[in-house]
Image (cartoon, rainbow, N blue to C red; front, side, top):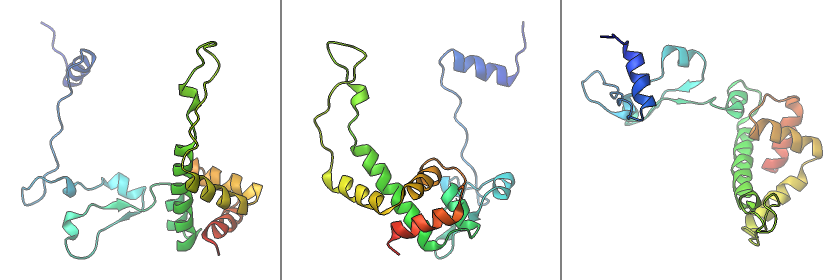
Length: 173
């Protein structure tokens, strides 16, 4: 009779397609179990910019990481202002909407040649496309590259001054 460790049993169960055992919810000091009582570990707290909720009902709201992405980290470090952070969030939201409006021609194939992408006659939402292209036209080429590099790809800025100038353009300052 073989004796398997608990991890080996879990691994074998997952391989066999059995659902993994559900983890128990975090229990608060008063014994109540609630998803909102989950708190980051000390290691997570050391590597993030966690904000404690304030105001009435603060124990019901979770702690959140204000620097969860590059824009948040730059804002938390004081490299960009509040207005520039809001401009970056606006750009990210508009970029996501713009990309969602682009036709997905890779999903459609020609019936004649399987390696040729098909045709999508949808134009998308013209208001979103026009707003994004208007914002993009106000930026210089180097500013567009820097904003894409930081806001979309989540990389560290190569030139913080260039990013700040681009975000000022986006905000309309």
